[in-house]
Amino acid sequence: MNIDITDSAINQLLLKKVDDVRLGVTGGGCAGYEYVFKQDQQMEGDLVIDYGKFRFLIDQVSIPYLDGMRLDYVYEGLNEFFKFVNPHEVNSCGCGVSVQFDI
Image (tube, rainbow, N blue to C red; front, top):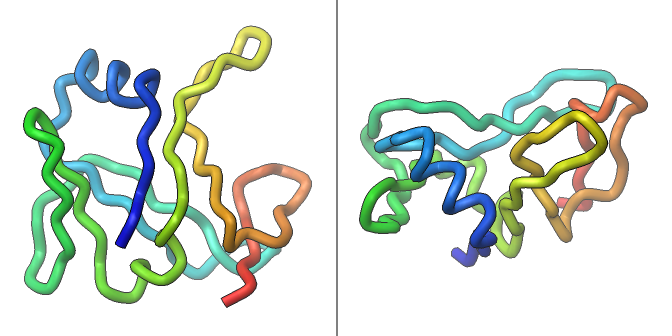
């Protein structure tokens, strides 16, 4: 399992003082899936990626969808947000929340 995280994303997670962050995908939206990105607690079966000051928690179903992705923190105009850059993503809806994968 390989997830790249940019320095900008690391800095934001450290500023927000999060401990455990759940990354994943869930069914929903007009394109089929939505990303999960929230502070959470470890559950049985989670893959845990430890970055020292925080950890990513990934459920087993989400692993193939997130393998090879990059988590970035971007500034676009007046907006700033965490952004998933995923090589498995083939389409997204107009609202930018829902995505489709080639898996």
